[in-house]
Amino acid sequence: MELRKLTIDSPDIQVLEEINEEAIPECERNSLRDLMNTGATVLGIYNDGPVGFLVLREYKAILYLAYLAVNRTLRSKGIGGNALKELVTNNAGHMIVVEYEAPDPSSPENGMNIRRKDFYKRNGFCETGYFTFYDDTEFEIGCAGLEFDVDLFGEFTEHLSTVISDHIPKPYMKT
Image (cartoon, rainbow, N blue to C red):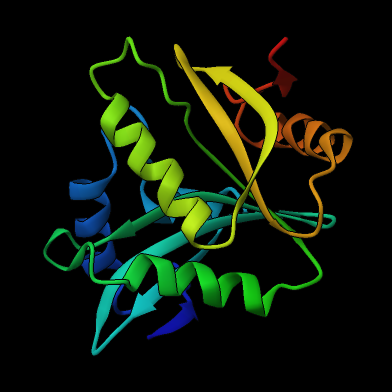
């Protein structure tokens, strides 16, 4: 398994766009080209060809994992976990941050939310105790690498709002 930085002109972009279409819900999806045009880095996940991707945004010591997707026929085979482990290993000087839907017993998607959280925890991400809320959904913040810095994350989200005007989550702790 290998991670490769892609460009808008990379020959495998179309294959990865098809994975994007299948894996990311329409309400959350952006084309990989549009993401790159707004400064995001797209890393292709390769295992005898392109099998998935990571979308990252870097700000100071933060490496924000916006998306992780693997071809549906190859899920649950360790590819996503191996990609995360390589990402963390190759970026030791960063606070790698991810947001995943917070478990909620009243949600019909709670089983999937718990599985996603457990996936990130198994692959080196720790609970931070912080949450965000946007698009009518509560997200829990996980972190790997450097210790989570809520002030820096808040600064990052302010910066991100200059790139993506409708994305201004504010981190909070539950009381």
